[in-house]
Structures are given as structure tokens and as C-alpha cells.
Length: 193
Image (cartoon, rainbow, N blue to C red; front, side, top):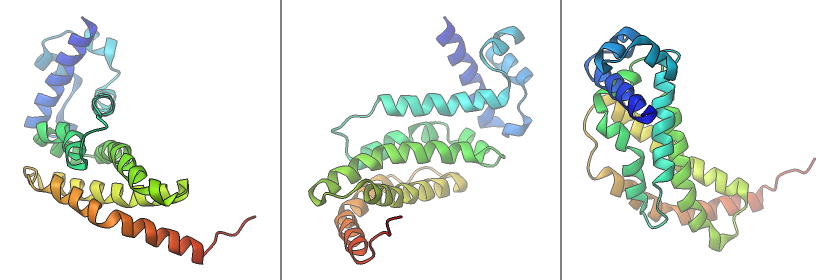
């Protein structure tokens, strides 16, 4: 019963976000939209900000739990963007608010999870150290983040070719970037303190 109630509250909140900006939504609005009483709302959430935080935590958990080792980079990207695509207007309203960073944090964490897997697989033959893996993973993760935030800002449907283009770019460049990192590291060894 608790999960169902939370789902009803969350859906009411997302429905409201499709119709109006985040800063115009009140607890009273959510209560009326969800057809619940005030005590029920406050049993689960402290305020609108808490509800918003819970949305992104829930989406990140769903993404993390649904990961498949056999998924391609493109499929992982599509899964990471599913909640953004499915709630496009609501996400755009969040983007326009002072809470834009929550979207960025969600995308950064999701991208690091799936990009990290592909970078580790590509780096295995090179014996790349953790600093190198982190560098290459962040290079691609922030590219994914930037491209996706631009898509959210424009408030347009996702280009259906983008996931495959991102995958193709990774596949075409990751070995060169790893080799360049290794060559640079060899030529510029870190000073030991």
C-alpha cells in the first residue's frame, strides 16, 4: 500500500510538472491532484523539494537495477534517458528552475555507471590504471551529459539517431584516447611526494 501511495503522489507531481513550472507547484496542488489528504503527503515527503529529490533517486535506482551486461552503449543511453524522454515537459520545467542541477546529477551518475563499464572493457587490454580509467570515463560521461542537457534545454524529442551516434563515436575513438593517455602518462610521469 505504501509504494502504491507514493507512486500516486509521484505521478500527480509529474502530471502537475507537465502543466506548470516547478516554482508554481505547492503541496496543496499535489494533494489535490493525487486526491490524498495532507497527512498522507507529509508521511512520505517533507516538502516539494523532498518529492523532487525522491523522483531522481527513484529513477537512478530503476536505472541501476535494470542494467544488463549485454546491453549496447546505445541501449544503455536510451535507458538512462527513459525517464527524461517519458517526462519531457516535466523535466524541462525542472531544467528551467533553480533545481536544474538535480537533472545534471542524475545524468552524470547514470552516465558514469554505463560509460564506466564500456571504458573498463576497452581499457582491459591496455592495463590502464584507475586514474586513466577515471579520465577516459569522465571524458565520455561529460560528453553524454552535455549533449543530453542541450537536448533538455531545447525541449524537443530525442533524435532517434543520437544513441547510435554516441556509441559509434565511443567505439571509433576510445582506443586512441586510451593510447594517447598512456603515451602522455609515460612522457609526463607524476611526481611522487
